Amino acid sequence: MKSVVIFGAGISGLSAAHELVRLGYAVSVYEALDQAGGFFRSSRIGQSNMPAEYSWHGMGPWYHNTFDLMHEIPFNEKGNIYDLALSRPLDFGIFPDSGKAQFYDKGLKSIPRMFSMDNWEFIKWAYLMLKTWTSNNRSKIEYDRLNAAQAWKPLLKDKANRTWRSCFGPWIGSDWSKVSLHTAGEFFRKQLITKPVHRHEADEDGPAWAQGAGIGWLLFKGPSSEYWFNPWVRYLEEKGVRFFWKKSLTKLEFDGAHTKTQAQVWSIEGAVESGRRAAKAIDGRVEVIDQYRPVWIKTIAKTDDILYSIKAPHIIDFIFWSLLILCGCMFYLCFW
Image 1 (cartoon, helix red, strand yellow):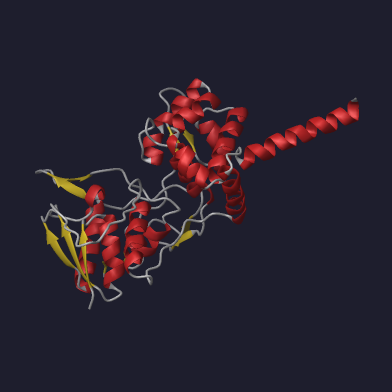
Image 2: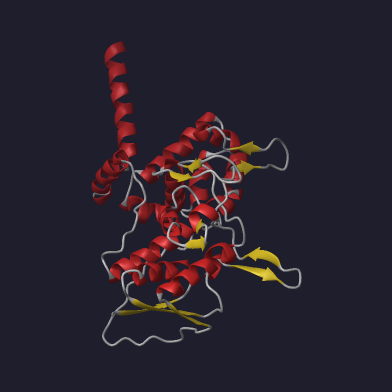
């Protein structure tokens, strides 16, 4: 039996352990703390025993690897985490200091109203987002160096710009002064056009329901450690994973080996996917669910890669200016 040692019992570490132990590996997990979950864990406070979370963490409709994994983790004798531990979607809402609260209740049509944008501002914002969606290398290299809030600033009036900045934390989970245009574009692409839909059966809270593109995020029905990490650790221990708590990694010695690391740490889905990809690097049988990208986006993005390689403008800009010039020529021929 092959042995694997994992350092860290956060979401990525547990995800890797989950995949490898079921493929027959002897898995050991070393964690510096006395509990699992890392940044996403919860705790109980003092004598009041009140639950507290170390971070805000909802689950969007594009959390495909996360939900797939939760189907496999028993919550109790009645069912799994996915079926029993998740809330129904929470509505997105913006509550200004003055004026009426606005909600994401009419799909994309809600965005201008929520963020105090007029139609022209929304068109400019959507145009810039479309450029991030329809590029690969340009977005990963060029747009990743651009601050999203600064990129939007020339396109929006002051109120709309300030509203967007205030929502970077609760929406994207990032400081507006640091998040890149690439990251913001990735977030909204996944949120607004993801597939497949995640379906849930009827329960004591109401009839059957589904979480699809644009739908609000889910929370746990209780503290994350109690509703996810503790049942997960119990399940992994039953499968044979050995946990070593309060064991810090202080030094690594390589005998002619080298390392390659890759991680997303800004979402639960990114952490689960990173753990699965790490496990897949060890055993190709591990399955990772790729994020959905429509064929039209992938096709345009591949074309833009060619343009970017020769330092040409984005294909969307190229098409826009070509149409503008064509219309100008037609106007000239018709009226002059």
